Length: 197
Image 1 (tube, one colour):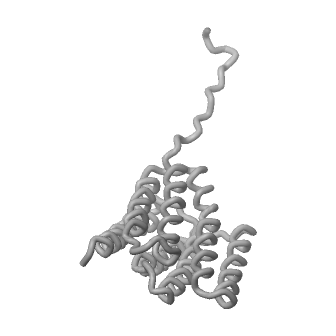
Image 2 (cartoon, helix red, strand yellow):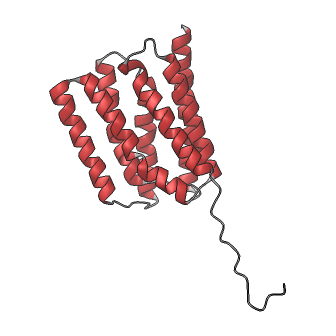
Protein backbone atom coordinates (compact mmCIF):
# COMPACT_ATOMS: atom_id res chain seq x y z
CA UNK A 1 0.00 0.00 0.00
CA UNK A 2 1.53 3.33 -1.06
CA UNK A 3 1.32 6.63 0.84
CA UNK A 4 -1.60 7.91 -1.28
CA UNK A 5 -3.67 4.85 -0.39
CA UNK A 6 -2.76 5.19 3.29
CA UNK A 7 -4.01 8.81 3.30
CA UNK A 8 -7.23 7.85 1.52
CA UNK A 9 -7.95 4.97 3.92
CA UNK A 10 -7.05 7.13 6.93
CA UNK A 11 -9.38 9.89 5.73
CA UNK A 12 -12.21 7.38 5.30
CA UNK A 13 -11.63 5.88 8.74
CA UNK A 14 -11.69 9.33 10.37
CA UNK A 15 -14.91 10.20 8.55
CA UNK A 16 -16.49 6.91 9.63
CA UNK A 17 -15.54 7.51 13.27
CA UNK A 18 -16.90 11.07 13.18
CA UNK A 19 -20.36 9.87 12.26
CA UNK A 20 -20.76 8.13 15.64
CA UNK A 21 -20.77 11.32 17.77
CA UNK A 22 -22.84 13.11 15.14
CA UNK A 23 -25.56 10.41 15.00
CA UNK A 24 -25.43 9.89 18.77
CA UNK A 25 -25.78 13.64 19.38
CA UNK A 26 -28.74 13.84 16.99
CA UNK A 27 -30.52 10.91 18.67
CA UNK A 28 -29.92 12.41 22.13
CA UNK A 29 -31.21 15.79 20.96
CA UNK A 30 -27.85 17.46 21.62
CA UNK A 31 -26.94 18.24 17.99
CA UNK A 32 -29.19 20.03 15.52
CA UNK A 33 -28.77 19.44 11.79
CA UNK A 34 -30.90 20.27 8.76
CA UNK A 35 -32.57 17.07 7.50
CA UNK A 36 -33.28 18.72 4.15
CA UNK A 37 -29.58 19.54 3.79
CA UNK A 38 -28.62 15.93 4.57
CA UNK A 39 -31.14 14.52 2.05
CA UNK A 40 -29.70 16.81 -0.60
CA UNK A 41 -26.10 16.07 0.43
CA UNK A 42 -26.64 12.32 0.14
CA UNK A 43 -28.33 12.74 -3.26
CA UNK A 44 -25.53 14.95 -4.59
CA UNK A 45 -22.81 12.80 -3.01
CA UNK A 46 -24.29 9.78 -4.77
CA UNK A 47 -24.02 11.59 -8.12
CA UNK A 48 -20.41 12.56 -7.30
CA UNK A 49 -19.63 8.99 -6.15
CA UNK A 50 -20.90 7.30 -9.30
CA UNK A 51 -19.32 9.90 -11.59
CA UNK A 52 -15.92 9.56 -9.86
CA UNK A 53 -16.10 5.75 -9.95
CA UNK A 54 -16.80 5.97 -13.69
CA UNK A 55 -13.62 8.08 -14.03
CA UNK A 56 -11.66 5.64 -11.82
CA UNK A 57 -10.92 8.44 -9.39
CA UNK A 58 -10.59 8.95 -5.62
CA UNK A 59 -14.01 7.75 -4.40
CA UNK A 60 -13.55 5.83 -1.11
CA UNK A 61 -14.42 8.76 1.17
CA UNK A 62 -17.63 9.26 -0.78
CA UNK A 63 -18.68 5.64 -0.12
CA UNK A 64 -18.63 6.39 3.62
CA UNK A 65 -20.29 9.80 3.15
CA UNK A 66 -23.19 8.27 1.21
CA UNK A 67 -23.66 5.35 3.58
CA UNK A 68 -23.31 7.24 6.85
CA UNK A 69 -25.10 10.31 5.46
CA UNK A 70 -28.12 8.08 4.86
CA UNK A 71 -27.99 6.97 8.51
CA UNK A 72 -27.77 10.64 9.64
CA UNK A 73 -30.78 11.47 7.45
CA UNK A 74 -32.79 8.58 8.90
CA UNK A 75 -31.83 9.69 12.43
CA UNK A 76 -33.07 13.21 11.73
CA UNK A 77 -36.32 11.90 10.25
CA UNK A 78 -36.73 9.63 13.31
CA UNK A 79 -36.28 12.68 15.59
CA UNK A 80 -38.75 14.60 13.37
CA UNK A 81 -36.28 17.39 12.69
CA UNK A 82 -37.64 18.12 9.23
CA UNK A 83 -38.33 21.40 7.50
CA UNK A 84 -38.39 22.21 3.81
CA UNK A 85 -38.09 25.78 2.55
CA UNK A 86 -37.76 27.44 -0.82
CA UNK A 87 -34.00 27.13 -0.54
CA UNK A 88 -34.20 23.34 -0.27
CA UNK A 89 -36.48 23.33 -3.32
CA UNK A 90 -33.85 25.39 -5.13
CA UNK A 91 -31.15 22.86 -4.20
CA UNK A 92 -33.42 20.02 -5.30
CA UNK A 93 -33.46 21.80 -8.66
CA UNK A 94 -29.64 21.70 -8.55
CA UNK A 95 -29.80 17.92 -8.11
CA UNK A 96 -31.91 17.69 -11.26
CA UNK A 97 -29.51 20.03 -13.10
CA UNK A 98 -26.58 17.80 -12.05
CA UNK A 99 -28.34 14.78 -13.51
CA UNK A 100 -28.97 16.65 -16.76
CA UNK A 101 -25.34 17.85 -16.88
CA UNK A 102 -24.23 14.28 -16.30
CA UNK A 103 -26.40 12.99 -19.11
CA UNK A 104 -25.29 15.69 -21.55
CA UNK A 105 -21.66 16.28 -20.63
CA UNK A 106 -20.37 13.14 -18.95
CA UNK A 107 -18.90 12.16 -15.62
CA UNK A 108 -16.26 14.90 -15.31
CA UNK A 109 -18.83 17.69 -15.46
CA UNK A 110 -21.22 15.72 -13.24
CA UNK A 111 -18.47 15.61 -10.60
CA UNK A 112 -17.92 19.36 -10.86
CA UNK A 113 -21.64 20.23 -10.87
CA UNK A 114 -22.57 17.91 -7.99
CA UNK A 115 -19.64 19.07 -5.86
CA UNK A 116 -20.54 22.73 -6.32
CA UNK A 117 -24.19 21.88 -5.60
CA UNK A 118 -23.15 20.13 -2.34
CA UNK A 119 -21.40 23.33 -1.27
CA UNK A 120 -24.46 25.44 -2.12
CA UNK A 121 -26.77 23.00 -0.32
CA UNK A 122 -24.62 23.41 2.79
CA UNK A 123 -25.91 26.99 3.21
CA UNK A 124 -28.78 26.03 5.58
CA UNK A 125 -26.32 24.13 7.79
CA UNK A 126 -23.94 27.12 7.79
CA UNK A 127 -26.89 29.39 8.68
CA UNK A 128 -28.06 27.08 11.48
CA UNK A 129 -24.52 26.74 12.84
CA UNK A 130 -24.18 30.53 12.85
CA UNK A 131 -27.53 31.07 14.58
CA UNK A 132 -26.96 28.42 17.25
CA UNK A 133 -23.21 27.87 17.57
CA UNK A 134 -22.24 24.61 19.20
CA UNK A 135 -18.71 23.52 20.10
CA UNK A 136 -19.47 19.80 19.65
CA UNK A 137 -20.72 20.36 16.10
CA UNK A 138 -17.67 22.53 15.42
CA UNK A 139 -15.30 19.79 16.59
CA UNK A 140 -17.04 17.17 14.45
CA UNK A 141 -16.81 19.37 11.37
CA UNK A 142 -13.13 20.10 12.10
CA UNK A 143 -12.68 16.33 12.00
CA UNK A 144 -14.32 16.35 8.57
CA UNK A 145 -11.89 19.07 7.50
CA UNK A 146 -9.07 16.69 8.46
CA UNK A 147 -10.69 13.72 6.70
CA UNK A 148 -11.27 15.69 3.49
CA UNK A 149 -7.77 17.16 3.59
CA UNK A 150 -6.21 13.70 3.91
CA UNK A 151 -8.31 12.46 1.00
CA UNK A 152 -7.28 15.53 -1.01
CA UNK A 153 -3.57 14.89 -0.42
CA UNK A 154 -4.14 11.17 -1.04
CA UNK A 155 -5.21 11.90 -4.61
CA UNK A 156 -2.80 10.37 -7.11
CA UNK A 157 -2.87 13.30 -9.54
CA UNK A 158 -4.03 16.91 -9.70
CA UNK A 159 -7.27 16.10 -11.51
CA UNK A 160 -10.99 16.68 -10.93
CA UNK A 161 -11.68 13.01 -10.18
CA UNK A 162 -8.86 12.82 -7.63
CA UNK A 163 -8.91 16.11 -5.70
CA UNK A 164 -11.83 18.41 -6.54
CA UNK A 165 -14.47 16.85 -4.27
CA UNK A 166 -12.34 16.46 -1.10
CA UNK A 167 -10.80 19.91 -1.58
CA UNK A 168 -14.18 21.62 -1.83
CA UNK A 169 -15.60 19.59 1.06
CA UNK A 170 -12.66 20.61 3.27
CA UNK A 171 -13.57 24.26 2.61
CA UNK A 172 -17.28 23.65 3.23
CA UNK A 173 -16.65 21.80 6.51
CA UNK A 174 -14.23 24.53 7.63
CA UNK A 175 -16.95 27.13 7.02
CA UNK A 176 -19.50 25.13 9.06
CA UNK A 177 -16.96 24.54 11.85
CA UNK A 178 -16.06 28.24 11.97
CA UNK A 179 -19.74 29.19 12.22
CA UNK A 180 -20.22 26.59 14.97
CA UNK A 181 -17.31 27.93 17.02
CA UNK A 182 -18.37 31.57 17.04
CA UNK A 183 -19.39 33.05 20.36
CA UNK A 184 -23.10 33.36 20.92
CA UNK A 185 -24.46 36.88 20.79
CA UNK A 186 -24.90 38.19 24.27
CA UNK A 187 -27.66 40.62 24.97
CA UNK A 188 -26.45 43.89 26.37
CA UNK A 189 -27.64 44.46 29.91
CA UNK A 190 -30.57 46.82 30.34
CA UNK A 191 -29.84 49.53 32.87
CA UNK A 192 -32.72 50.19 35.16
CA UNK A 193 -33.70 53.80 35.87
CA UNK A 194 -33.64 53.01 39.59
CA UNK A 195 -30.29 51.25 39.45
CA UNK A 196 -27.63 52.86 41.63
CA UNK A 197 -24.87 54.67 39.75
